[in-house]
Amino acid sequence: MAPEPNPPELHLVAAARPNLPKLAALVHALAERPAFCRPVLVHTGQHHDAAMFGGHLADLGLPPPDVSLGISGGGHAGLTGRTMIACAELWAARRPAMVVVAGDVDGALAATLAARKLGLPVAHLEAGLRCGDLDMPEEINRRAIDAVSTTLWAPDEGTAARLRAEGHAPGAVRAVGNAMIDSLLRARPAAMARPLPPGLVPGGYGVLTLHRPANVDGREALAGLLEAVGAAARRLPLAWPMHPRTRQRLSEFGLAVPEGVMRLPPLGHLDFLGLLARARLVATDSGGVQEEAWALDLPCLTLRPSTERPVTLEAGTNRLVPPAGLGAAVAAVLAGDWPRARPIPLWDGRAGARMAAHLAETMGAAGATA
Ligand code: UDP
Picture (cartoon, protein in one colour):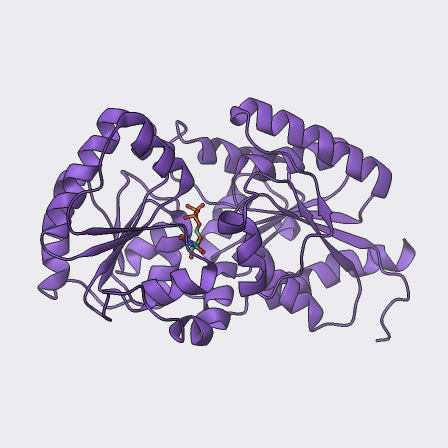
């Protein structure tokens, strides 16, 4: 089929760091097809500095954003409201054929609401995730995004079936697999070639990441976690690429990083994957890292009471660990008491291709008449 001379625009909304690997999978898959749409990368600005955003683009093979809205800070309501206004102004003028939002951050919610109120179709990349904890800002966002999206790309068949059972039109829901895994598999060879931070040897350290509000925004919770991290670090040195939110809280609360923990700045995508791939384990409250750990067959100690990625628990690599249990969980890993990763259907590096195929089906026809 000959490419369309002037294909309609597909706006891809990137708000924060974890959106980028997911969108990259779709961008690369679209580039392999005849152009039925023109991808336009819209950066809302939620994460905006080089460490959390700009530096990740080249690592993921993404171009600079086509549109930068420059909206950051201001708390959940302020950020969501100002991002909605900026998106609505952009899309009232440009009328893309479709908007894609990834994940569950405030910028994704704002973009979804703005687009749908303008009558634009929205595809939610990573639809259907639920941890059941409505005190988590991300859980509110993902439920609200799913509720009004017109296309829902779920990471597995069970999640897709649950979305259909919630009442979404069967044709709107598709199990496409996990876009994060696409990006990891693509980046892995380059990541393995990155040097480790001085002093770390393959298999001789664990990785720590923490940034969930429930873990870091309260002094008591964060102090308790630091104690647990200290106990873990007495068994295995830990490398901690620190999220800016956590760095700020540590300084506000006057808390110190325990002995045995190497504090690092937030790392670029390749440097972080290179660090993760050669670690003995990861302790984290990140969503994406739970998935990446599965792909690397890396024991993942999730420092949360629940997860929206239960398939990683079933696959064996991931366990929910309360802070008080962290030292013992590290000891269990070191003793070899951890299962190998069991397969997860569709987490095969082809999620981008499945999303692009679905878009070509749903949008190709609309594009022909646009
Ligand atoms: N990541 C990174 N550098 C770091 C820490 C994480 O590039 O220093 C990547 C990680 O590989 C994953 C993504 O950031 O692809 C996960 O983002 P984050 O943990 O911030 O958010 P969540 O997944 O919890 O929404």
